[in-house]
Length: 83
Image (cartoon, rainbow, N blue to C red; front, side):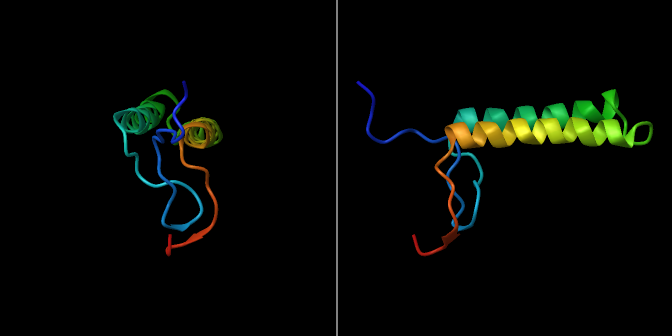
């Protein structure tokens, strides 16, 4: 039986649109993986040798992070801080 309150990995930001820092270990693991892969990207596709390749690498990683936040995070909407 599914629970009525889903367990979000990323809470919605208090001000603005988007997500804040993770609130579960799974969310922290995703963030650690993102920054780890970003650091590896500096070695695999150094910006000094291929700036375009590096930007594409970072864009793909960022799109993946946003997709995970959208899937496992609290639904985003614009917030003014009063909630």
